Image (cartoon, rainbow, N blue to C red; front, side, top):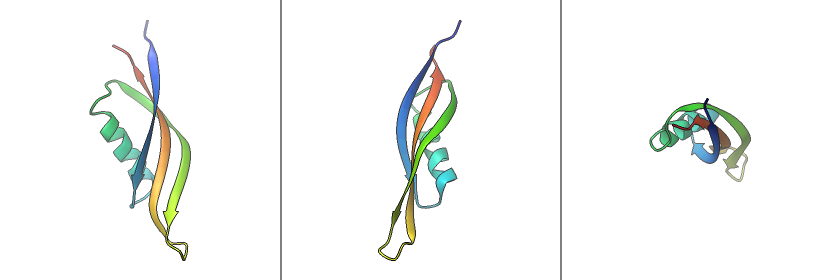
Length: 67
C-alpha cells in the first residue's frame, strides 16, 4: 500500500511557463522525495507599463509518495 501527499508551491521565471514549472519542481525535489506529478493551478504574468511580459509565475500542486 502507498500513501501520497500533495503540497502547493509557487515558482517564477523570466524565460517562460515551462521554465517556471521545471525550476519549481527542481527546487522542490531538493527537500521532497518521490515526486510523481504536478498540476498547474494558476498562471500569472508580471508586465511593464506597455504590456510586455517580464516574468511568468505558476502556482502548482505537487504530489509525492510517502516513504
